[in-house]
Length: 339
Image 1 (cartoon, rainbow, N blue to C red):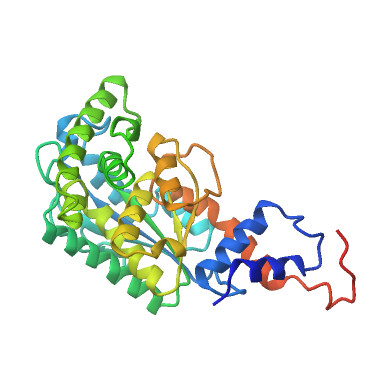
Image 2 (cartoon, rainbow, N blue to C red; image 1 turned 90 degrees about the horizontal axis):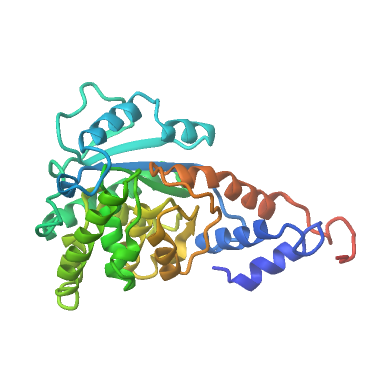
């Protein structure tokens, strides 16, 4: 294992002016520390999208109906979604896992699809627990299994993404629950909510968080399950297992970072494997990243999900890895230190 001082000393010894690559060198240090080696790998890599529906959509928290989740699953399976395009552009194999999508299952899906459906969407957290403890544990295991599969196939860097209409509502609940942020402050506009929809969403989040806070001291996992979703629980398990296996975990946006909060709380130390790809336009995302102690690579006000922000940031990790592994040292070329 290496420490931060060792990585900086290596970077400072390379054939370039000291600290001349600014933020890229900071990213290189973070990347090296996630794998505990001076020559970290970003290839092979894997992006896994977890999909699930949310009962709270029926309570008016989203600008879109739940049916759009299934439509977007079909678009991803057809290779025509944003996530497909960005994954292909970055030579990052994509896998789609249905953990809890309502409606019919895909007919003759491609090989990159896995049907791991536990239920037809979560219950509405507006009226009671979204998931039972057993449902949460089952979704967490799906995520762990996907990390095991990715690593068995050689992946050194993992990205989790999500597809689930309404999932910024449980993400806001989880962020408030696990960071102490006020429920209203954790609520944004998601996929385009107007003022009235946002106000409804804030009321739902505030009520649900109060219910979960009442039990968190005696039942941490139960409190998390109370305001979670199938795909979020699966991402959390994916992070916890991937981190334990020594992979770099490149985080996407608000929903993915809510899953990262769960992973760190239930599997402490997972954060050491994490790098934040970006900070989204959702107001609670900054609080979630701050709680994890992570500085985002990009701040471009993206809010799509589907691992899109992480995939946009991925080339910068490739550049950081190349800097660490492919640049000659000054002493190797016979030069003196010159800043």
